[in-house]
Length: 341
Ligand code: KG4
Ligand code: ZN
Image (tube, rainbow, N blue to C red; front, side, top):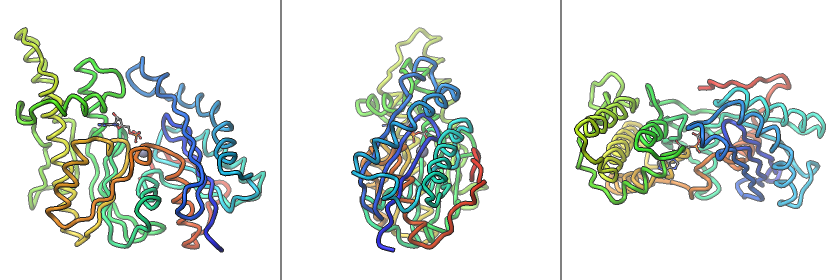
């Protein structure tokens, strides 16, 4: 087959998205977000997100096809995120994708959303070659992975033992009075602060040789340390130096992520690092990874921000990689897996 045309559908959290690719070329990319509806609750409300997916599903898919000047007949396969994510949200996307596949007779692939974050870098940087490390960080996941074959073999090297990096930022942001999602606010304020102003721990696992979790991450202690410090200052009636708090938090999280990731690259003798997930929009992390990558001889591939956050292109490109690798489509009765590893 020439390069497969794949429709990708994404609905794991608060973005309903659809995109078309031909192999590793993006043909269209449509994203509808229900973020605004969740902001006043301080976090994503699953029922609101599910309803928004049900409303946005058909318009998103129709627009993605129209933008690419195509109909379902032109598509070789359909791919949809089957997990991990919010169960009710996944159910809308997977049910919709199954209906499209059934009506059109096209093969359907239920894919792992986190691997989609890795696959999407192919749009910007070309094929993922074997022996690549990947750091995927968002509000829901922090994973260090080793890729042997994007279509078949990916191993988990490290994961977060508690809060994901974005979740930690969002929780501290709330304490500082920023609206949800607070990560981008912390990023902006951190750019004006002193990262050494407040001593923030780098988590219980600092990646020392012999440590119990050399590649796992823990950000809940970081969050608690910052919260205690802020509450202590408030109790003394002192003004909170927001920029310094943000800079110290961002530096601590970016440093531990970059250090452990580079250690992982050395351990696996890998000279390529892929970075993805919504948190990879963070300027402090991007700068730290690029700096460490230069000094460790690692080619750091961080895609443009619209490809880092959740989108349909990541699902479509992974689908195309599976078709090209000759992987069989999912069984017609495949189910969502909200805790997919
Ligand atoms: O991947 P994503 O769009 O959604 C999922 O969580 O799956 O990631 C959103 C997360 C939120 O926690 C948000 O605060 C964080 O990524 N984020 C950032 C930045 N942009 C988004 N955190 C820090 N700095 C940023 N610039
Ligand atoms: Zn994601």
